[in-house]
Length: 95
Image (cartoon, rainbow, N blue to C red; front, side, top):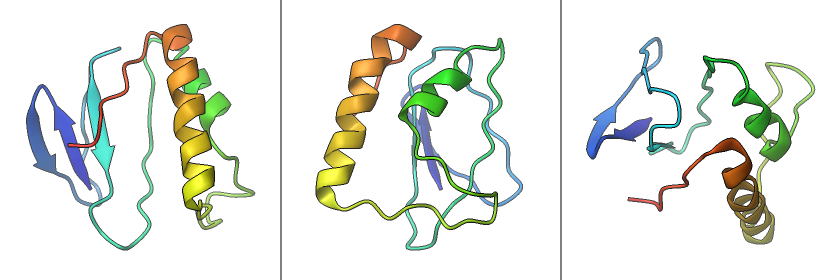
């Protein structure tokens, strides 16, 4: 997975960690054809609600991620953009 933070692009692998300060602009991008799972720990608490509101729930941790068609992805991105001010979040355009 690629991570862009403070203008620097890094590739992270299974088991790696990334520390992003609260509300710092950043971007995660799955550069592979395989699904990627990310554990996001929000501290201080509160920002996890953004992911709960914008995300698509899955049945369990082993459930494959949903495959969104173009229309569903557009709706997802619109929802994320609309929720961004509520959580003081800035969406970075794809690099």
